[in-house]
Amino acid sequence: MGVLSPRRASALLWGVVGALAFLVVHGAYLLSGGAFLGVGPIAGVACAVFAATALGSYYAERRFGPFAARFGGR
Image 1 (tube, one colour):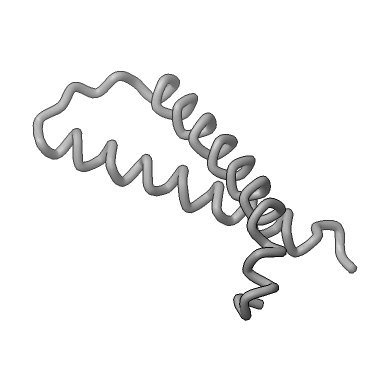
Image 2 (tube, helix red, strand yellow; image 1 turned 180 degrees about the vertical axis):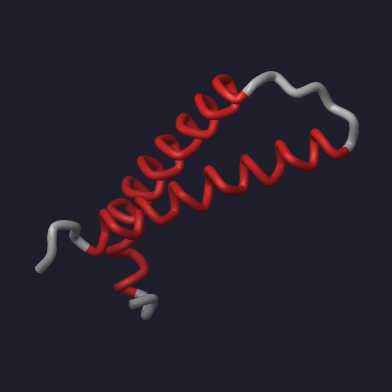
């Protein structure tokens, strides 16, 4: 097994998806005429979204993984 377990790798990838989704929504906000707040605050929020999404998906996979395996999900 490598450095990352499959569950950790999955959680990190979901974190990346969450952060990129936030940046897409922020880009749409800017295109609709919203004010640009600066790179620092946007990067901070994107990192917070990354962490929250990664931790949430790690917990959810641990919590609901046995349920999915029992009912044919895996």
